Length: 331
Image (cartoon, rainbow, N blue to C red; front, side):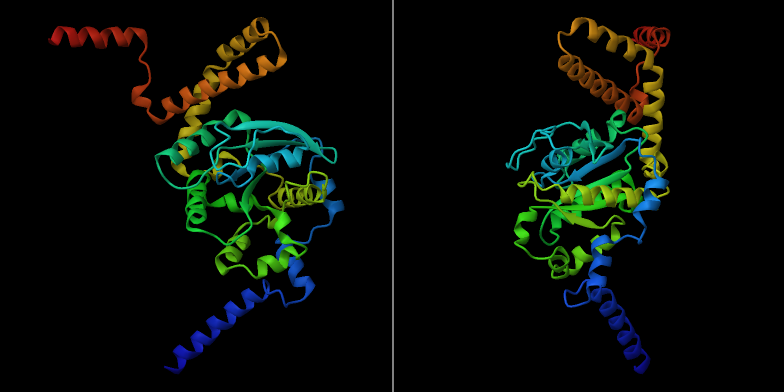
């Protein structure tokens, strides 16, 4: 009995230690550790260790109505993505827009919103996974966009869905962006998180990129975007300047994506020819770009279907004739 009590005391003391880093009554240095949730790397070393000319690929993930598209617009300082305050899904397809943060080239990939695991959500996850042309060879960082507040059951289901899509390593490449930063009302970000429930705090620790708050209503305040760039640069450095490549995906998804890439590689010349035709027949550059996106969506959708269901791929003409003639003779 005494040994059991001793074990319980050790467990409790460990919990207290973990919570102390999140307690609003602790020192400022501890708060800073929570807020960054990253090793203390000098900015000068970061500048030297990353390729400043390479475009940073940042993928937005989150629930419907979380403010993903608005966050993307805030980062790029323009209305690149359609957004509104309704809970209906505004973003139906993955979209990419490019710009820069303080002179650094950045590509933002907006995605349809995820909420719960259902047939609809599986269709959404498929849309995200099949749009490989938008973020090849892979995102450098994922931004998980969430409204300020404790974790809900829908949040937990969404996190499981994200992990099933991309693999467990995704959290090593993730920064949490809390939207509705205007609700802080002057409170320190660390104090707000320190007073949140333990599940949220544990989840923050799980994400290697830490967290920050965005106020998408105030588009003139660019401090949070500058802070995001610093966090992104730091996380890229920590991850060895690598992006989230195919090797991190679950085995089943890896196989599908490898097949997709082979199918698209075989179709490359045909796709390029059709893109050239678009330039001839479309009247404006905007129409050309729109038609190209539609073309790639269709090609990737077909490649995904073939990769997922190889038995349903179209047979070569000679085999198809033999197959149909065999059926006729048997009747």
